[in-house]
Amino acid sequence: MNGTAKAIRGLEDFFFDLPRELIAQEPPKKRGESRLLVLSRDTGEIALSMFSSLDAYLPQGSLLVFNDAKVTPARLYGHKRGRTGSLEVLILNPPAESNRDGVYELWCMGSPGKRLKIGAELVFEGDGTELDARVLDINAAGHRLLRFLFRAPPSEVLDRLGHLPLPPYIKRPDAREDHVRYQTVYARRAGAVAAPTAGLHFTQDHLRRLRETGHEEISVHLRVGAGTFLPLSERILEKGSLHEEYVEVGLETARKVNDAKRHGVPVVTVGTTSLRAVEWAALSGEVEPKNGMTDIFIRPGFRFRAADALLTNFHLPGSSLIMLTAAFAGLQNIKNAYETAVREGFRFYSYGDAMLIVWRPADLRNLARRARAGRERRWNAASRKADGLPDFHRLGRLIDIHNRWKDGLRHGLREVEVTGQLIITARDLAIPGGSFSGLAE
Image 1 (cartoon, rainbow, N blue to C red):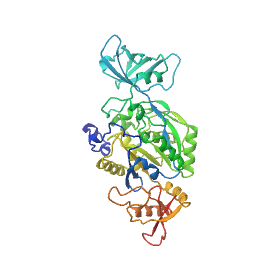
Image 2 (image 1 turned 120 degrees about the vertical axis):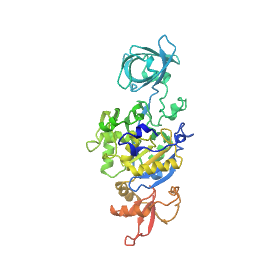
Image 3 (image 1 turned 180 degrees about the vertical axis):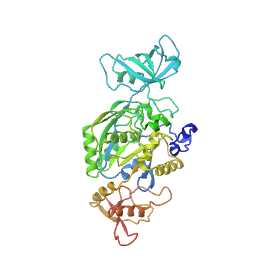
């Protein structure tokens, strides 16, 4: 899509052709009415479904990790004091807390540059509120260091004056609806300038149902920065690190993830930000409670220590996030998944559809133990559907159950997960192909 970026050595495999009409410009009419592509890390199998059926594909008894970051309306429109020409700034590190004197020195992106020279006095006003700023410095990236004077808590001032910083590929101004829909329903702590978009699909009712069906949830905090939209460069690839973002992984979160790993409970990270947070905290082996700035760059070859599954949206070609998903699921699997998503007309990026990447032998063992307590019923492995189960045949073919079964046998299993609700059991291991039955809880 971008000839210059495509030519960067090491990025060639992470580009794909994306029709512009697949870039979602609006959220779905109702939260949670997105489509869902399910990808097996192990076999590369793909299933197409709806996000409302997520429960059916999650490993049972999972520990879900959410990012509780809240997007700050950090885009400001104003003018130079005494002038009428308009200007725009985006605060890159909006304050999450108040201080005594209301003075904050914050790095910003801004335009037009000719109105944002060192020493320029700026005014942002509206809704009975005024915010003053002065340009102190300009760095090599062209960002401006502004000294702001807040006459009320920054969160209150920005809520009145600020606009939500929608991503650059959404070609419209922010609207009133975005102040609700570009936030997750579980967002708690301000400071992000981009949403952890995999979480935008969840409703409170969906979260309640997940709890009722035996899933547990915990939170991390990663303040998503504007750098998440920056294209990769040869310098970034050589350096092996990304832009810095603030992260907190609490003591309780670290304890629960480590306990889950010890007891075979699948850890499902909701979004690439949650995955980056727990993997950063687990670089020494186990997840450690810690906070600070991270520039962790997850790309093929990375050793994952915490995450077993990943719920994510579809990402920009040639971006660090598509490299992360390729590291997690395998490059060819991701290529196939993205080709399928384009062919099937999935919506891409922040307001787009979702992808769930699952499957790991540890999950199978855990699920098999839980399934033994379930109700047994016969199921024909050649059938196109089973009552009450998701349809795996939207691509015009059956899931390759036999391959999953054989893989399960290699791990000493007699029962193999197929859908998250159905367990395939080899009744007679002495007979090639065996007979199969379903165990449904």
